Amino acid sequence: MKSVCGYYRTSSKTNVKGDSRTRQSVSVKNYSKTKGWDVKGEFYDVISGTTNVMDRTEFVKMLSFCEENSIDHILFDGVDRLSRDLLVSELSYEYLTKKLGYTLISV
Image (cartoon, rainbow, N blue to C red; front, side, top):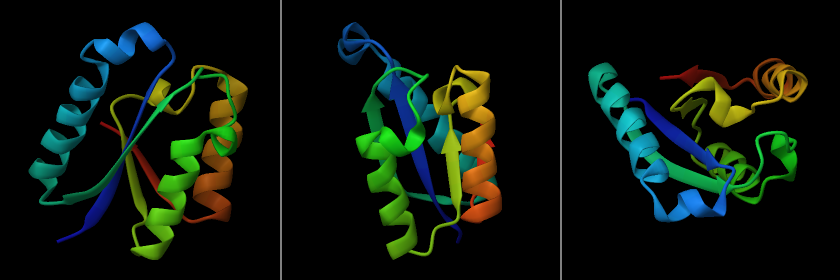
């Protein structure tokens, strides 16, 4: 069974009390289940989507977790959870996939 990680993000502290994290987690877990994958780690940042991914505490923790556990697939509820800024998205995608070898999937 393939092990994967889920990354969740909300930009607003008011969303922390809402269902954002739960909704994102359910989406990632449901998708993983259809593929027969196991979500081994879930990481959640409360930070603006324009912030570089390497400046996000939980994102950096997730990359370390993935490296330690030989996980190469990172799942997001939607592409905007990686970033809402096109340039940040493109640079992050290029770095994570081409340089670090991750597969990024927007479920």
